Image (tube, rainbow, N blue to C red; front, side):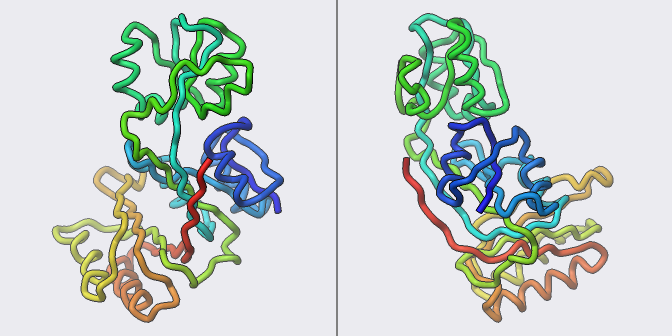
Length: 268
């Protein structure tokens, strides 16, 4: 099975994707991953969807709203950040924007004068650190690979730092079986109580909402797409009934069932 995820090799996305497929290719765009799976070029795609410190990955949410794919698995992995460099003195810390944010307190306390540079991935920052002695990187300690010094480990602001990834597949592989379900809803309308109306069908059927997120639709100001994760499978009558109500509410727009899936915890 061929999978595609954020690269280059050594990213946290790569580590998550390795739990799905042995043949992993890379791109530096979440949207590119979703497009590759939607277009049938890859059997699986792995994208980060949410971090326990920094919240949702908005590019992933937007890509899932704009392309037809299914979610077939969720992977949760703890994030262990380390500071990597050729030497103890450096001018710049390069890493993915989320990694920089997750280590904000450490960097402000220990390296207040260092410039922060957001790059496409943690692995790309490690590459820069290997090439330039004035650059340090934030990434998994294993990325030092004997070429860089591990100046500090577990530098994330919270020890509970973890990231959720979703495994994408073509729409034809969407499953109704699983303990969680993801939906994308575009009501194409806005009025007082709209969100409450969309939440009530789940509460009325004792379905726990594990995540609710709104993103601008891009159509007009104040117009939103909603993302729902629920702790129930599409095979359950209560879930089907709740979605039928949602579809009535969003009759001027659309409801996309990304599928039901289970969670796998991966530790590196």
